[in-house]
Length: 79
Ligand SMILES: [Zn+2]
Figure 1 (cartoon, rainbow, N blue to C red):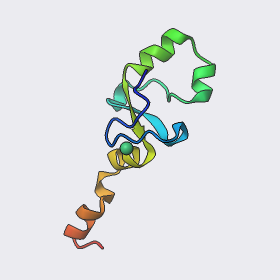
Figure 2 (cartoon, rainbow, N blue to C red):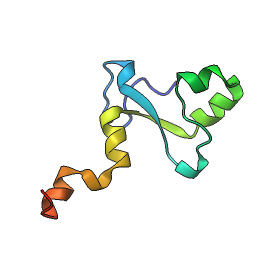
Figure 3 (tube, rainbow, N blue to C red):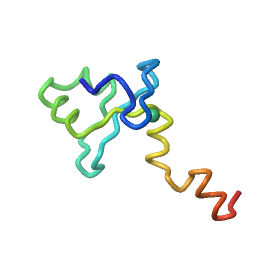
Figure 4 (cartoon, rainbow, N blue to C red):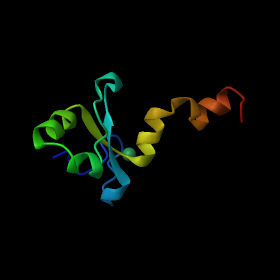
């Protein structure tokens, strides 16, 4: 349903390397992981799913930590 690949880089090798990223953090009600999926109705899961895109773990980390981008750090002479 989410395309089966990272929406940023296209990674599509292993499902364990993909996760849901909430586009608008304040709108996040719960994390979409196996524990959450097994404890909620399909309606609540689908409502949460609509707030997300699929990202690989590398792209997900980059989105959440832009200040740690090596190009940014090297241009600021922190490396
Ligand atoms: Zn990616």
